Length: 99
Image (cartoon, rainbow, N blue to C red):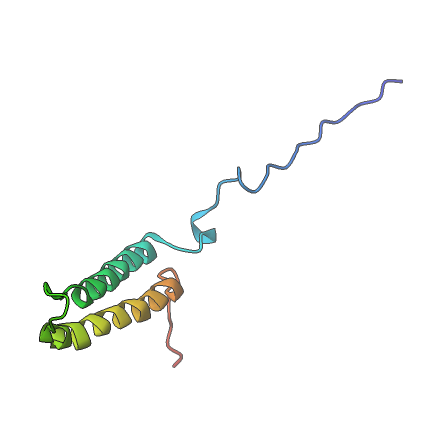
């Protein structure tokens, strides 16, 4: 009497298993949106930077310009706000209206 030994198939670790497109948390659209938001945030910080005085005891009124006080923080805030939207956004989900 010969015993038949069956070969068991070993499960692959999760890191090796290929993920399907619908299992991925972010799509290509999410990454493009997050990249655009990152550029918007960096642009806001760039607008807020600079404006030092060349004289150590001198005062430069340029630090109170509209670009530094209003535009730069607004761009950064919008970038952070849209970044949250880009993370939450699911382009594969279709929204259907109920009649």
